[in-house]
Length: 407
Image (cartoon, rainbow, N blue to C red; front, side, top):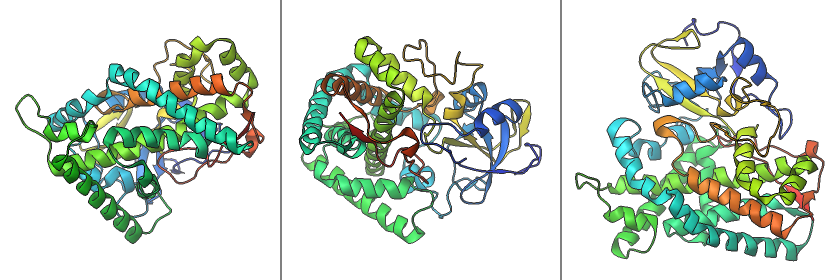
């Protein structure tokens, strides 16, 4: 990468965290001293890392910074050729920029309105209750991630897509090959992705023959203002994308949120005393998350300037939304978890034209599961010391390996 981005020795990225729930010390240092930092990605390629709130928001909202990570000269994210989730057949099948992307978003977004998510909430709460019943029946200690955090979002997204919940182990493996930056050999990734595409193509064909009351059935017949529908390739990629994003991110966030709230008992007690704080507590957990994974990569094909630093054409930029969410210039008491924080303009779901399509669903699931846990298990507590919690390493999405709890 060109030398007019900070010329000091490049940091290895992702920056490892020393504790499961704490941010790396480097975040604060970079925000203060080196807001556009040289980093080396798992592939060995160089990129520029942004850690300030204003810079991350600027780049994510600027259409010149694109998701064209397969462009000539774009940095490869992971060591394998495919680049994982950031540069897969799924990413290739969907328009990543411009009018085509906006058209696709408009067609899919109809399913993710706040009103539709509110209507789903009673079903989500009922499923959370059933999963907690099973967890309580098995007895404490339990792994809240395995017993609740993972199966709940998988059930929700399978239900929305009309796919069999019994196939969730397959989805878990396929999404892991997309999201893991270091674990799999290229041939394993290629084989898993071919299976995933074949599965979803067969599912789309089955829905075309026999539609149901699900998102894919609706998208098969949906058209835009010009009367154009989605191609089979786009339908397959949409199904894949929603399955991966719809369970992996929220599953990890449920356990991280609960861990944050239980790591300081006063937080849990505050919510027990005032359930109206659930909505703002969820937003604050999203802002406060110090283990979100890789961040959002962008590629620019023309020269641009960020924080007074010139980025040459061909630069790959990594936006650390989590580091930006701890920026004291944007949030008072940025390093304190304030469950009543309002407003809370965090960047956990990104910003601009590519902000997370499923954020209303994620919020609904997180609020529902927290409400149910407070009602059902008020005595919930960590079954291990906070320092004994372990991060998932090497994934594009950050999480905890398990969340041992008792009640």
